[in-house]
Image 1 (cartoon, rainbow, N blue to C red):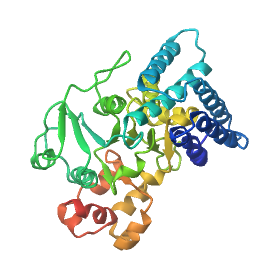
Image 2: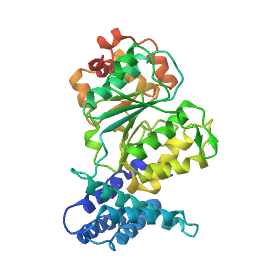
Image 3: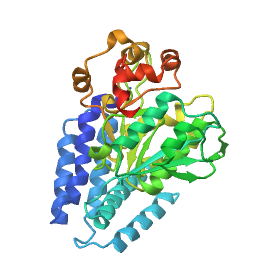
Length: 378
């Protein structure tokens, strides 16, 4: 079974292509340097999926050589529309579709770079989503997670997508700094009717990111620092912490993307074929993992420590909640130096068991590692 964790270095090499083609100067030379980069990867890999990806990327780069050096947005927009028509044609093979997907992402990145003063970047937008029907106030720990996002994203547009304005003292505090966007949650996924709040959120987050770009964060994502350093990627996600007895998956609780992300569009388009209302991970973390192996140029995959450390297992919860595991503040900060945030897996039984008696007084103390991390946001 292919493991993304073993291919993180290769994934990083793939994504250097975007910087190479976006460089000022000789367009043909940029493409040649990008192709040479991919060939340097191609000669040393053994995974067949990655070898195929190298071939598709090289073909996509070669197809861009026909474009004139002096390009304009109208030309690139025309190319994107022509590629889209070709992808939907019944005679187009799977290999040709993959090449067109990669070509489209390269074109979109270049087009975005031409229209932005600082080059192509994930826009400074945060998408938060509330699809559940609960009418009580926001739970304490999730409230502090939202406060952490507000604290680290002060220059960002922070949107709350919801079917109605939520009520409660904590919500009222948050809403002063949020931009509510009232709409009916997605009701259909292909021919499936989706009624579960989590499933609706899965579709809603991708729709918003594809249309507007930005970052999506779950309500139990404790942000430790600004995501600014991630904005240079076309699409960025992280692996979840590998738990014993479980398969490796790609986390879906923190996603960043430029508008029009081909990875997110492909993922959303493939969801109906694997959707199973009783098996949450089939269309989410597992499908995302499968596509990231097949199309590594479309998504920058990061190590689990970026968003999913320490995980959801019993030992992970003990590290977060048990006072016996509490580290001095400087050691804790050093321990999490490579972490941008921590997904708390708040719907998991392990979390619910440990978190049920946590109060504001426990956070103020602070009596555990999680309390130390959350105390600034009280």
